[in-house]
Length: 186
Length: 136
Image (spheres, rainbow over the protein chains, first blue to last red):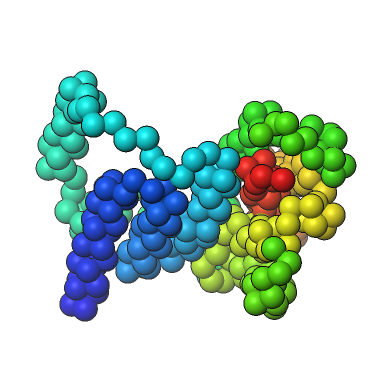
């Protein structure tokens, strides 16, 4: 019962943070609020017993992403450019997409039911057999690293590719690495 | 930011602890929450904290960006290498059962090594991203 109340409080805080992010004109405050949003999501994941996901969300969302946002902020202005015009196209796209999402909600199976598709396909096999087949206590690790080894290889390749992409777009020249900072770039 | 004495002393105390925690998360991922990805991010966070407090130039002397590029590729190569050892031992790609005489030990060895590869790639990528975005 207490978990239900904690969930309700966390979800309310998430909505308040999202509205605050939307209303805030100062980009520094927006960035900080984004970090708070990630931390709240991480707490929600803990309530859902998804500790591994919460760990990742706290480290990446509230940690690294925030630093990268701040680094970008130091290169641009802190004030959001305010436009008072309401674009009809954007508004209609938002309303239509939102309508479809709410319509789609009716087809989602009820939360936490035993007969949900996610529970009936492979989850049971993993829970019953991973002890004999893999032999390590953390089920999440055995699924990620062994049963789904190809997927994790793909994820790492994506991260590596992203790293190469950032280096091509934003990488500094060799002179910069030697400590000679090219100030004309900024 | 050398004149911020509180920040620099707290960072000096925190950075080794963050690194130790990252190593714990890395190698305890089989038993508790965590694994290569989270550990990589936490390990990178210690370097990023150093870079924020003591300046990018000092961080560049601690860990060279060119070295990080090699590490990022090395992590991926460790992962693929573990998979190829599975083929050389007569099984499928990423088949850990054949890494040791006992399948369960093989699984354990395989998981530890691929998580290590994941950790190395993720942490070096995160520091590379920080270098790319941080103003010198």
